[in-house]
Amino acid sequence: MILVTGASGQLGTGVVEHLLTKIPANEIAVLVRDAQKVATLQAKGVSVRTGDYHDVASLQTAFDGIDKVLLISSNDFNNRIGQHKNVIDAAKEAGVKHIFYTSVTLKDIEQSPLKPLLADHYQTEEYIKASGLTYTFLQNSLYFEVVPMFVGAQVLETGIYFAAGEGKVAFAARQDLAEATANILASTGHENKAYPLTGAAAYSFAEVAQVLSVIAGKTVGYHSPESGEFEGFLRQIGLPDGIVLMSVLFAAGIKNNDFEAVDTTLEHFLGRKPTDLKQFLQGIFA
Ligand SMILES: NC(=O)c1ccc[n+]([C@@H]2O[C@H](COP(=O)([O-])OP(=O)(O)OC[C@H]3O[C@@H](n4cnc5c(N)ncnc54)[C@H](OP(=O)(O)O)[C@@H]3O)[C@@H](O)[C@H]2O)c1
Image (cartoon, rainbow, N blue to C red; front, side):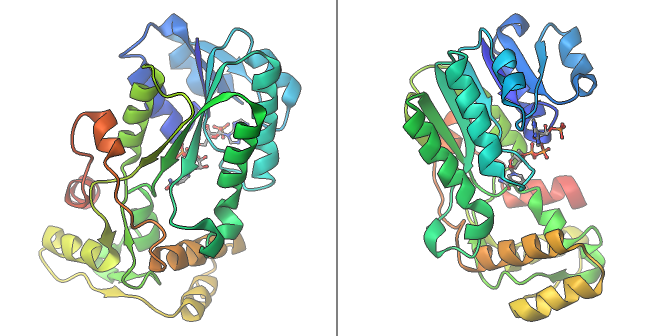
């Protein structure tokens, strides 16, 4: 039986939807904090188990009878490595055989401005390896879905103001990652592998602006301020500290070309070309 954590979230919802098209519902379990969020899955025959990454006992109970666990990385940066360690320890204790982990693909974490935010993915990978569990790392690129977040909902009117310079990102659509992850979970031969899952091309924010200009039928500009000016602007418009820090660090990471590398593994597991920039932006802004 396969258990998916984070199944109330956006990636997890997609993974379970795709898994349901491949294997019987009674071979799928989900771990959620609030069972009400996945009532429709329960109605389909999926085994719904409640548990919290902060609560090892709840995780051990939830993992009873499970062969494979997909650990979807926590979205709570407060001691995220501790949360992940709890899941890994509980999986081992409960006799889980194989753990799949949604990690990140990044040029060089040691040199990255994103080290304070994302080094815990690599620490989690190391902890899984040291646990002796069979593993598969799904090293996800940045989601295309972060683009609207970074450029703002009014971008066609305002243009792009984002400190990413000419840095490029091999964005991947979250639904493509969900589909490929389900394909991997439902098939064999993934023991002790790390899969970099990226889009088929890397794009700069200048290229994002060009595609948005075509969609809008007018010029959508791109201005990349210096990092200090960018941070000052985000504070001036009243964004919370956490959002300011995240935006500044991601912009710096992108400028540093941390997510530039393109890999064909996502295309391989989808059996088709991944969503590209034009398709994604048309779906959101056209
Ligand atoms: N590659 C990228 O560009 C990118 C972008 C954003 C995030 N991420 C990472 O990828 C993960 C999946 O993305 P997503 O879009 O699906 O995120 P999401 O929609 O925010 O979902 C996160 C999931 O984690 C669960 N969760 C959080 N804390 C938990 C805890 N203490 N115990 C049990 N479950 C917990 C949430 O449960 P509740 O429903 O109970 O809150 C939710 O189901 C994120 O969590 C984050 O680590 C990657």
